[in-house]
Image (cartoon, rainbow, N blue to C red; front, side):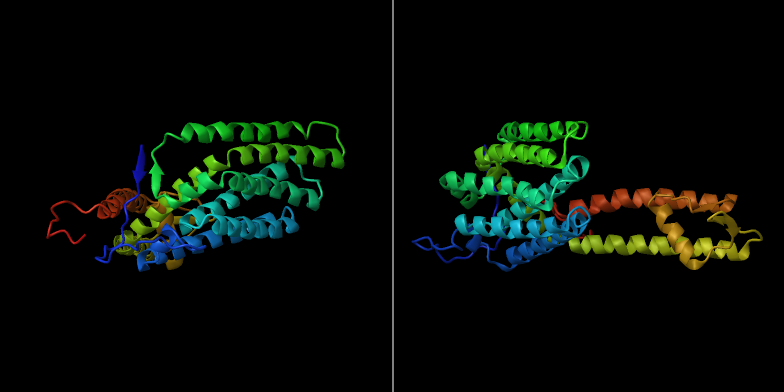
Length: 341
């Protein structure tokens, strides 16, 4: 059964228009032009831009030309989808992030099995599934338009179809690991790579509708996440403030103990010496988070006891702090006036 995503915008008394608007920005995407939705969309866009920027900088080590292919493909595919299927901005963000994830997987297989193929072959192979997705979307335009224009979150009945189209794609990817063991020249390896990406492109074109459903659900969940995260800003800030105070407190205790005890209490990078305040703060952070890199470690009993207390406090603070933050997103039916949250 489909689940209708609740509209969290404030209700107005004005009646809905008798005739639905038309044009590239018609549909429920225009209905979410309110301040809250705009802020949520802006936050999602910034995170998406950051993700794509990091991916683009990372893949320059593999092929500099592939960076421009990635950014150009995002602009082409997302622009074409926004024009063909105007609707939720979060569907567009989900599609953009999906292309970014696809780029990471593509580069992984490229580095593992096809390092010596030409940049032109890399670019063509990268674009093939994206063009096939556009072709399949054009082919099933009516169904996809109804999917995008609806605000319905499917509860899981379509997940079998998702794994159905993902299985052959991953199967083709797994078979490519047999290529490095074969005695083939660079042109033959490039041809095998293009053949594998062409097979994936055919699968993507046939299941474009299922991919659109998956992206719609991801976009709706993305939108709900950003709308709900606005309620977490204040409690999260309060939690981080108390967390920081505890770290500074224990960092100061470590520094003071070294000042007033006869022997140094820490071994720092293999040398037993007094700890500085900056090093005490750093050690307090890694201890409070139970990381323990080992570059600084206590050697005296009193300091080890204080470290144990800090570790216990850190674990308890994380448990109760996260519980309070998550609970703040679901206000109780009968709010307690004595509870500041």
